[in-house]
Structures are given as structure tokens and as C-alpha cells.
Image 1: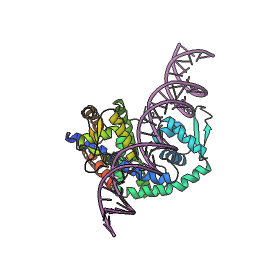
Image 2: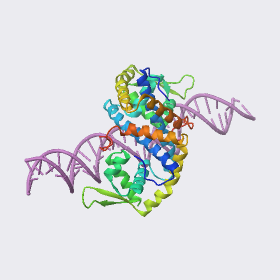
Image 3: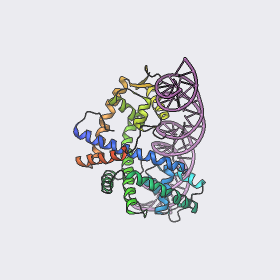
Image 4: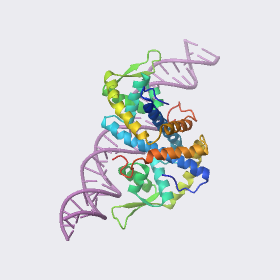
Length: 156
Length: 156
DNA sequence: ATTGAATTGTTTAATATTAAACTATATGGG
DNA sequence: CCCATATAGTTTAATATTAAACAATTCAAT
């Protein structure tokens, strides 16, 4: 990690922090993805199921915002999950443009079987840091991530 | 951000830190990618050019490890950059399995034109944190990312 | 020396993701 | 009411990425 760019201390500090952040996230994801794939779920599929499980039915736009993916991608994710009987689409009654995604019982069962071991792996990976370090990491990342509005399309 | 999963304090702490880390990285990348794409480079292409520029010629395997991408992906990245005349392939003399990637002068010029504004954007985004916070973030992320060997294939 | 295992790069097929154009619905100002 | 604009979802075409099978080369242990 780190960089060999011969910039100002300020640049080097920012770049080193950015590279460490990027690589930590990618590294953790690479390790977690493998076990998710063994469960037959892509990252987007798992994220969608997990969001619906813990937040209740959502329209596709909300899922798109939550996962930071484009709307078109969520259409495909919902298509595939619907084909497998893990969720169903319900046309909004008030706003007929919206389609709310509801987990089926099969979908809930999938989350119940996949989420606990996934969480256990996350906890195990995060144990490289102490409790207070985890809380500090969260605070720093939230400060970084929240500095700008991200409620619009993920990549407008 | 955060989670509504009703787990133990330990689980909630780890999950919140993980989610914040993931979203911060994705959020920063989404914003940076747009400007890279305006320069006509994908993330993998930019990462490859930048690595060759600052580290010197590398074989594809090294690039693969550095970018945390599969070898097959690096083949395609190198193909596309070679077609555009930004790098050239040089068969290794000592180990004839290897192919070292060398930047062309056009490739170096591309990095010189793209890297500085890219770095400026990173610095601007990271300024949401103070200097010491940036250093602390780097330390925490390195601890997380280095806890396990990642010198093998990115997704073996 | 020889053979078997490991490593590097390549190819192929499948999936994921995006941007952009499109349809349908909602909303707000004349 | 009517139209302009915005929003939700869909479709399409292109690119990115992966896993897996493969060829060529190296290396190590006999």
C-alpha cells in the first residue's frame, strides 16, 4: 500500500488515506463475496434481500439509492430474484409508477440462512480492530461519506 | 447508514463499521470515476497506468495483485491500453512466461495529464477529515487490510 | 535428466454494471 | 383543464469482471 508519488505532505497524506481505505474495502469485499457466491447470491442480490428483510418492502428506486447502483441494475437484480421466487413485485397503489419489492417467505428464509454466517465473517474480519477503533473507523468513514448529498442517482 | 439488525453490541459495532467503510469507499469512487471516465479511462486502466508510472515496468501478474483484479481482467486492460498505444508488452528475458508492461511516451503523457487533477480531487474529498484523522484512518484501514495475506489471486 | 507441480498469460462463456433512450405516471403552474 | 417537467421503471447496447479451462514455461525433487 501507500504511494510513491512525490507530492506535498498534504497530498501524500490524503492519497495514502484514500488508497488504504479503497484497498481495505476491496480486500474485505473480495473475501466476503466468495462465501456469498457459495450461497448463490451476488453482492447486489444479497444487498437487496438484506435491505428488504431489515427495512421492509421498498420500491426499486429506494433500493437503487441504498445500494448505490443504477436503476437499471436494480431492475435486473429484481428480475433474477423474482424468477427464483425470493421476492415479488407489487405495483404501488398510491403512486402507480412505483413497484414495491416484497420478500416472499422463501426470500426471508434465504436471508435467515445466509445473513448470520455472513455477519459472523464480518465480525471476525473486523476483530483486527478493537471496539473503540471500530467506532472511530465508523465515525471517520461517515464523515467522509456524508460530506455530500448522495440521495440522487448513484452515478448521474 | 447503519443497520437495523438487532444483534449483540459486538455484532452491531462491527457491522456499522463495515457498512460505513464500504459506503465511504463506494461513494468516493463513484465521484472520482466520473472524472476519470471523462478522461477516457476506466478505473482499471487508470490504476494500471498509474502503477506503471510510479513503480516502473511490471509484469501482468504484479498488476493483477496490485489492483486486486483477476489475471484475465488485466489481459483485457493491457490489450486495450496497448491498442491505444499507451503501453507496450515486452516478453521477459529471464522468465519467458512473464510479459512486462512498459508505458510508452504517450502513456506517460496521459498519466501526467490525468493524475494531477485526479489527485487534487482526492485531496479535496479527503479534506472532510483533518490531517491527524486522515492518518488515523489510514492506520485503521491498513490494520484491517493487512490482517491476511493478499498476495495470491484476488479471488482465488 | 526427468517428471510433476506451480506459475504466467490467454481464451472463453457467463454475469454484472452502466449510460442512454424510452414508456408510463405524477405534479404543479398557467 | 392542459401542458411542461419530473420521476419510476424498463429496455438496449456496450463495457467490465469473473471463473474456469488451457498452453507455455519454470522449478524442484528425485
